[in-house]
Structure formats: structure tokens, C-alpha cells
Length: 212
Image (cartoon, rainbow, N blue to C red; front, side):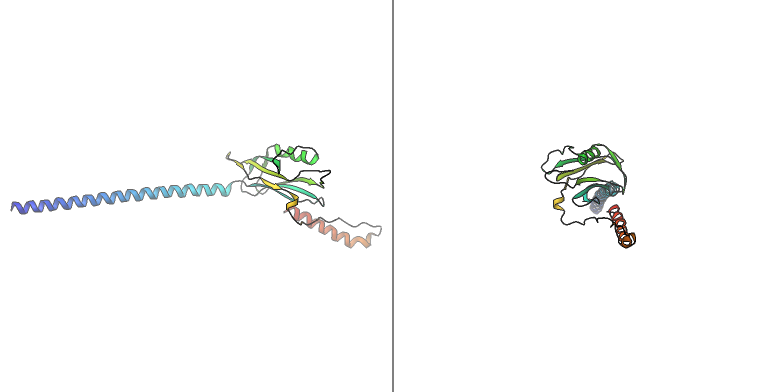
């Protein structure tokens, strides 16, 4: 009888130990799963925060466009295509070879003044100014092919520096040329139709330039 009782006790102890071990393994697995879930939730939250910051930050870029002033004239456009304002906006301008462009004429001097003064550019806003005006190698007015780097700060104080952009009219290719304006003459009626057409073209061109 004692032997049978001992046998039952031994089996009971073994079953209890097994159940305890099983509960311990299950608890460890649950803790590991909870830890992995928490880590994933934190990673997802950080990713969402980062995506939100990317989506709502300012994005300011520089580009060169044909000027409405005429042939061989180019404008510099600085635009904020982001969703928030850019502050303390400045430009770094160096020649394609890396040298600093000195303000030697009215165009480079004016652009340099803008570039070195901190500005605020709101979402969707842009600034447009001359970049090159009828420049020739013998008598250049404006900038030679240059690298422009945009620097600015967002509303949270985070600083951004965009990659340098090369502004070189020689790399643009064939571009539209602004019209020559209205035709003038002594006979006003004879030129009315053409003047009206040229006026409409000028309006369309200026609207297009404003939305460029």
C-alpha cells in the first residue's frame, strides 16, 4: 500500500512539475511576444512621426527659368513646395569650379544681397529675380554657371541644407523665346487685330510665367 501511495505521489509531483514548467514556458513566450509587440509598436510610432515630419516640413528649391525679359536672359526662382514655412532662408552660391561669385554687377550684387539675408518663405510662395541678363563672355552680366545651395530652418528650429543645384543655361537646351510685343504703326485700325493678338499672347505668357 505504501508503495502504491509513493508511486501516486511521485506521478503527482512529476505532473505538477511538468505543469509548472509548461506555465513557465508559456509565461516566457507571452513576455517575449509582448516585448516584440511593444518594440514593433514603438517602431511604427517612430516611423509615423518621421513620416508626418517629412510630409509637413518645408521643401525649398532653386531653379533657373527663361526670363520674360527676352532672349539670353534667365531668372532665378526660389520656391517653397512644402506644407510649412521656411525661415532664415539663405543661399550659398559658388561657380561650377567651386569659387565664390563676387558681386561685380547689378545682377550678381542684387542676388548676393538676397542670398545673404535671412528670409521667410511661406508654403506655396516663391521669389523670382534676374540670374543672367544678356550675358556674353566678353561682357557678362549676371552669374556664370554656378552651384546654388539652399539653407533654411523650419518652425521647430530644425535646419535643412538642400543638395547644390547647378544653374547653367548651356545645359537647358531649346527653350521658348518671349514675343517681341505689339506692332506699332500710323494706321491704328490696320494694326488693331495684331496688337490685340499680341496683347493676349502677352497676358497668357505672363500668366504662364506666374504659374511656372
